[in-house]
Amino acid sequence: MKGLLVKEFKLTIRSKSGFGLALAFYGAFSILVPFGMETRLSALQSPAPAILWLGAVLSVLLSLDRIFQQDLVDGSLERLATTPTPLEAVVVAKMIANWVTAGLPLCALAVFLGLLFGLPLDERIWICVSLVAGTPALSAVGTFGASLSLGQGRGGLLLPVVVIPLCVPTLILGTLVVNRAAQGLAIQTVFLIEISISLASFALMPFASAYAVRTNLEYS
Amino acid sequence: MLSGLSFVLKPGDCLSIKGPNGVGKTTLIRTLAGLSSIAEGTLAIPEEEIAYVGHLDAVNPHLTVNENLMFWKHMLGTALDQETIQEFGLLGLGDRPAEKLSSGQMRRLSIAAAVASNRRILLLDEPFTSLDSEFSSVLQQKLARHVADGAIVVMSQHSGPLVSGAIEMDLTPYRCQRFVDGEAFGERKN
Image (cartoon, rainbow over all chains, first blue to last red; front, side, top):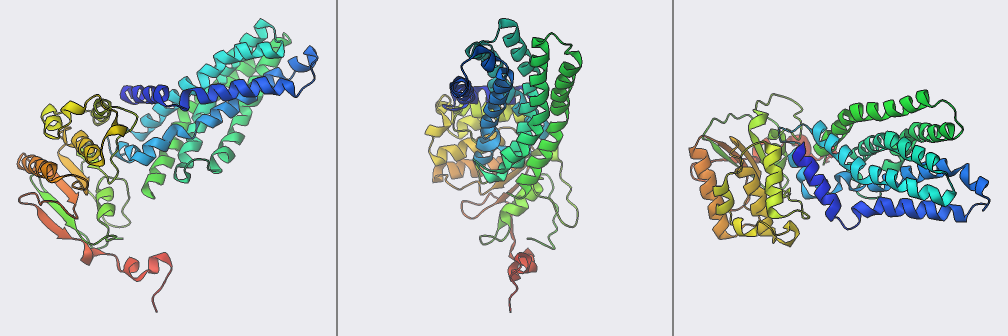
């Protein structure tokens, strides 16, 4: 597991498009959206949590292509399936690596991007907190989608079709946490449900994902 | 793709699988490695003893030679036999990114990562492909020593030298008739 994580982090840092791509897209998306909106501060502020959350979902989606692709092309995935390391552990390592390299940086960036929408500091911090709680689910569901669409190569239609509907509950709850916190309402229940979706995704998706990888390898 | 195939290998056996293209050599190796399932019959192989080298090299081009070796060492959970690394001429290439390697060097790295693990069952798919005569003979001798030490080697082989004492098996008679006739692909012969 440690070896897998070290490899994933090294590869992400070295890849020319990998690490910065999700961040750059998130930045560009969040900078461009206000240009298409009314310039009144109140008109910018109210949809801001939803926009920042939607940007995060799309950015994570952009990073999913590379999760298994290189390992599939160079034959590593096939050889990994024959080692004593269970494929479930391989998938968990990939989920963690995807979250740390694609999900977590977005959470930090969101604090600054919130400025563009004129959000106060406490609301920006809530966006960051709700993203930290919700993005693990996006990475877990995304890794599952990536393993389902293994044989399709890059740019397959199956990946977004599978992943986007599964991201909807996290998107709704993540936005709800920020909106309720901004209005001073109780957020405990919504926040706990959001966290539980992330935990459940991390606990269950590796099994589904490993099964999908195994099936794809059998017919490759 | 194959039917009626039955064999037993014991420690110290080397099986060289032969046959024309498409006969099922890779399928058999992949099945033994647990990557493909069998439709009928039984397969008894201690999975924790397997080291598998497929027709792809399983070398990540963005990692260095040493990083690739260390990765497979971690994954196979065994020590990395430095003697093997040296024999395969990889000591001087340690810090070179794998993308800068020639296809022969890449193949050497791929095989060394599996062979250096000292696993008791080696499953190799066309291991001599891309190897020059010098390293073909290094591999041949290495496998012979492995077999003499009680390991089991199964390899599909189109070309390259034969490991001494290897059992040769031609898969042609075991080719499933449904695949020969094309029936399995829905194209019956008249």
